[in-house]
Image 1: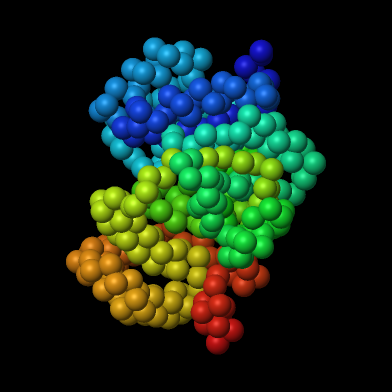
Image 2: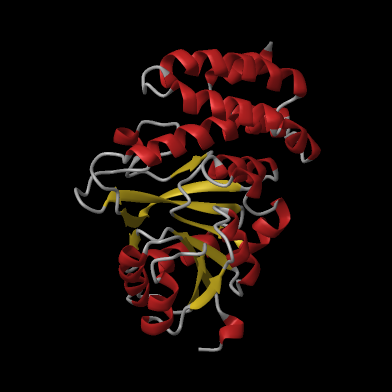
Length: 302
């Protein structure tokens, strides 16, 4: 295959997942569609992940970073990609054999689609998981529809659209990166299409480890506040922040019995606001009407 004519580039970021990434890469080898490359960005793993890939998957393009940069590693993969379509795959996700072929076909048939969202099942119990869309999964899981977000662990985007709207927001490190990118894609006039024929399996263990719960609370809270100040009108961003903190304090932090992590996230969000204000790019009212929830839409109307 002429690598200069590669149609798709699969980008995977990994960190200390030696036990999982081998199966992910093997599943990609078995794809029915063959005109693609695989790029793995290793976020400074210390468990032999890079050595495993070099030894057992010599066809994979491996980028080793000197430190863990979180989601920013995906941007290194996108920048190195030679494909017209960028496929995002987490290092613990297994694609069905027809995933990439189906994705390429949908992009060719839908010129205004900027990003495709996948149907994800838990690898272990085969239940639907990672449902990020603001519609009822029991009604929409098997139906195609335009969404306002996606799960990056199994998704695909046009490289030209990413070049136009920008890559992942590196300041976030983890969590809310899909919401951030989706907002820019929608504001630029492109569609995000959920496709139930794109099926993948996510290795989510039973029960969330405590450490991951703390990380999700910290980055989810901080990045959620930053989202307001990056994309909302300033007065609306202030009102949204003043509503979010006390609302989640009672319904989220106390419920999880982790007030300390929540307060640290709020302080980090406020401390980092000057940097966020420097990269503000407010989106249109029409975009906000689409991507925000009922509470924020009420603020927008006020």
